[in-house]
Length: 94
Image (cartoon, rainbow, N blue to C red; front, side, top):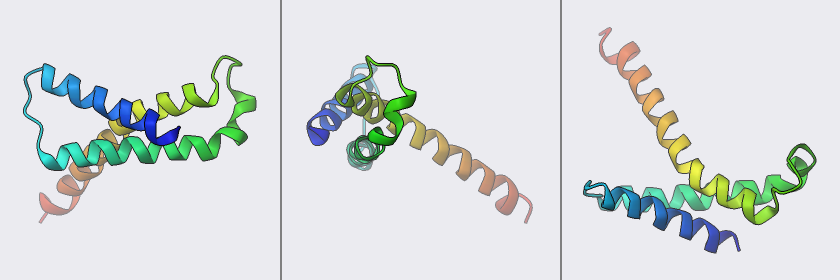
């Protein structure tokens, strides 16, 4: 279930990028798939502990799909922030 939901999420994200006219690279394709699978798996393992804090309609498949779809964007945003911070602090100050 995790792999199927995460793969569908990655395919949707890749399809959106291709439909918007951007040309995806092989590295981007691989990282998109792997980040979706990682985030889906993390939600799968965390769901039992978090289910008491979530609305009743968020079942395990819904939570996994949300995590897999948004997780890739979050990982990319964090990566961009870290890279810009490193460039600003260590590279430009040299």
